[in-house]
Image (tube, rainbow, N blue to C red):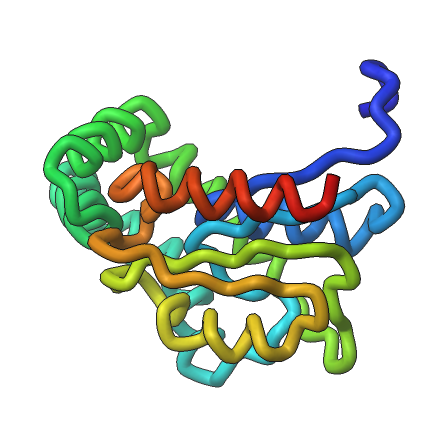
Length: 182
């Protein structure tokens, strides 16, 4: 942003990218104008013991799990449309098992409990109605209520990659949100 001379920006992040966008507003709130978070977990909520354990065990599971099986299973869990699942398989294959594990661990490092923290920026939070990854579908509505400037929407006929499974619905919401605050 400094190199390009950009003082403030709207950050849009899907899944792990949403966790990265949250860290941007946490550490550099003056640089963030608005947030759009797609199918991601809240970085600053307290994790249950089970969730902490799952995150700690993930690197070992990834290491032991056959990569092709993990790709196929992850794609099915993340999207309802077959063409999106195929895209995800290709994307996961390009990243590779070793780098996927690194990315997962670095994203997990974004999770830090902050009891009274609120994102004090206009925020669009969306979740696919069929998002079966982690606890996102369960926690998104509560998270939205917790945030003072959050607008929350379910994306119909969509999984974890709701912006890809149902781009028409997502783009309508995105356009409406961005126009509200210009």
